Amino acid sequence: MTTGRTPTPSTPPLPFTPSSSLPSVARRARSFDAVAAQYAENRPSYPPALFDAVEELAGRRLAGARVADVGAGTGIATGLLHARGAEVIAVEPGDGMTAQFRRALPDVPIVRGNGNALPLADHCADFVTYAQAWHWTEPARSVPEAVRVLRPGGALALWWNTSAVDVPWIAEQARRIEAHLGIDAAVERDGRGMRSALADPSGRLDFARRRVRWSRRVPLDTHLANIGSHSAFLVLGEESASAFLTEEKSRLHTLFPDGTVEETYVVELLVALIA
Image (cartoon, rainbow, N blue to C red):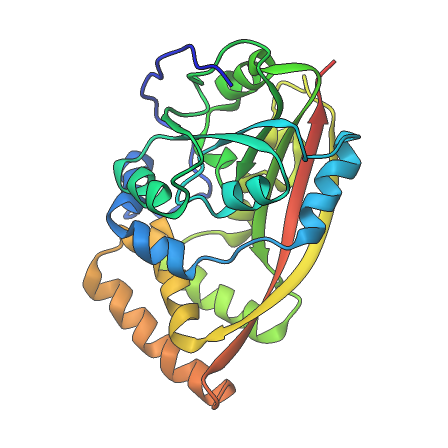
């Protein structure tokens, strides 16, 4: 897959409405680089059923397809796409995340850039994918860029792991996080693309939507490290973040005395075909 453009820096929109005390989005976007190893080790992966759904909605298999995985981070989704037989090129703006990616996936190419100015040639990809990353882009720029890079009949696929708040303990934890950070969780979930109108405010793309539920069992410390790897906590300040996670560990140890937490997720998937 060929590259072509040099990315330009930009300020992405907020993925949620914060209190006035939360740091800027630019700072939050940069915060992942310092904890790339923590991110790679503790963030959840994605279930095979997600990629089955991507193929179904796109009307073609990932095997043999050319895929641009944008905002690839440490390569969690990229590695799974590669394992499905796709010819993947990753796009990632951060130094730390790129270094971690190269350690994990040395045989998969990665280029520096972001979704607002993709460093890729016109009509070079069958899929453009964003795993946990579309909310860091400006759709007014990232939508035309995806359309430019995709071949006719190609697909733009966006997805997010979201916590299953119909599980009581997860809902209670979400409320505690919301209170600690001073955020509106409902606005955050919308801002991460659960509504196609927010994923593409122009209405240019016609998104099909699918939800995939799955779970994983992890040590309590992994669960807490996952929470701590989110940007809102990374920029919160060590004292405040540590205080919350210490209290949360005590609460959850009562619920899970064996030290193993079952996290339940609903992957929100949006797929749009390009004419």
